[in-house]
Image 1 (cartoon, rainbow, N blue to C red):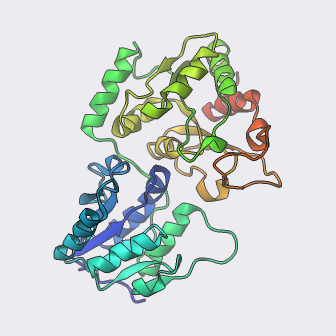
Image 2: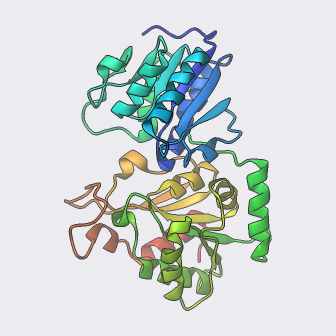
Image 3: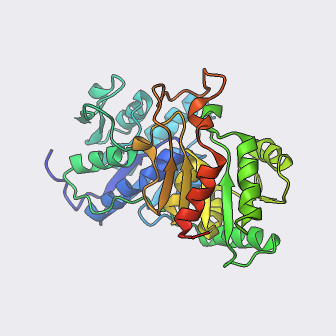
Length: 345
């Protein structure tokens, strides 16, 4: 297709449904903003993702798609977007539902991947690359490139709001920490399922070693649903570690992660957030594929074993010993933390 006019007045982006994917979409947003500087760019995302984009510099307005509402209410919301006069709808998810939403908006340009039997709902259907799927960031950037816009930014970026910074400062100070204290954040959860999670006993042993041998402070992060997991890990520890699980919001976690020297995480939304705010990350990959979702912004160490059964993308492992996670040893993660900090200890 020909290059879009820089005078395009209004664009709607149908954004990803999951936090990690939403973070990886930010380079696409940056390039869209760069290529269409005069356009109003709105982003349609689920409520769970929306706080990532509060005051984001590349988005003018976030429209929340509340998936808990009855389908008639959701349909009314999407059709009401017709009045905004969007000259283009860019679809980042590959689902049929996203394409149907775009079709209902009635934009003259509806661009997305030709997947899930939705080609007929799009005006510009982009064929997926053959062979191994690209990194998710590149998959989103290929949609922007299909518009004829230049790609000048490839790194994810999140910007915590002032309110999030204030919330983070309150939680940080409540632990008795100064801003310059060397704190290691640990995110032991993963919304995808238990197969993505390193074992609680190993997180506990790692945290003890970081405190005892490394001299670091350690803090656990997690959603309210992950509080039992965090408390299980802390119960296995011999040393004291802080927990902010359930106390921070998505916005304040961005600001808290930015204060950590390193964040250790499974392949999860937390991993991507920490990396996108400029924090070093040690990422533990099991059933998923780091070629598709590895962190790519700040310095990162990816621990992963390429087994015959991986990547399987299962939510639960069919093997009793969970080999892809079992092979990641406590010593491996501890050394990765020291290496990424440039420490010779």
